[in-house]
Image (tube, rainbow, N blue to C red; front, side, top):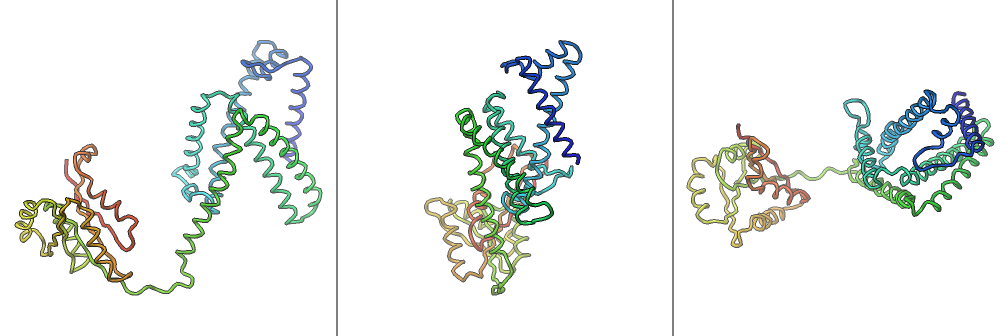
Length: 355
């Protein structure tokens, strides 16, 4: 009943404003809206005129807020049904879908920058999007009444069918007439989004299928080779060696030789600080770190698909963030190399430096 009264009030206001604008001969102007011109004719330039302007501004603010209220909720339903990333279904600390709000705000900023805040250029995008939503919602209601077939379903189908037809005609008219004025963005964006939704949904279905425990037989017991990748010998390396011994009593240290003199100094100190782990030295004639390492990992993985190689990476963390750029990023390179490598686990052992 409340919606019916609201609809009647809106229709009355629309018809009244349309009649008054026609009767006063008001035409759209570039720097003044029709509502402003109508209020000036009716109330002059007094306080009532400015009240109409203030109320119009508040209505527009409320209309803009509806997007930030409903888009995150719509994104939640799409994420729940696995059509968009699941991050959109996560509530923030203020119990709102923060990711949807952030994405919508970012896209709104981008549109304002692209169109330089020109509302005349943005209106075609808004109009096509709104009437697409109207048409889809009315068409969906027709489909629902045909499936549910509750009391009065036939006249509800007629009512929603007429609504879908009318809004669909308006949508096509705006899309054709305003295509070159910016409506082409929405016309191309909607099918693109639908295709993205289907790809995301297919991905989640495939992930669920591969992770499902239905008809799953447990794999054979795993074997594990633990390697500590050593580039030097310091406190952080000693801690990593101790950690590796907790993973496997047969852990080994691995060093890729790029300088024979550095190798000699490392071997001299290894007996005291190597924690009893054997040191394997891989020669690298071309001073490549990853080449000999990958070859050695390939040899270990020939033991079978149930054999796992765990690489323990000692890494010291500077006390201040900007000091990180003063050191090489070998650990990051190694982690990126083995990120998509099957049966290779990279464990980072950080050693935090003090201020």
